[in-house]
Image 1 (spheres, rainbow, N blue to C red):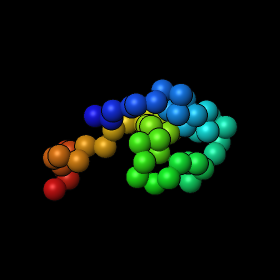
Image 2: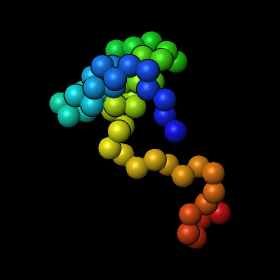
Image 3: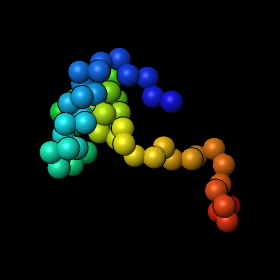
Amino acid sequence: MTIVVSTKVMEEGKAAKAAGKTVSADPYRAGSQESADWLAGYLYDETEQNVDRPEGAEG
């Protein structure tokens, strides 16, 4: 679950993806809350990875 503090920054991430920019276009300092919010926007339409257990024939 992602906690977003700034919806404005999240919208910036969404707009960057819609404009065809890469994830490296994140203008915020790595590890900052702003960077996390921007990435949440950038990745909002992608399926969340299942990391707690294998799927199907995995593992």
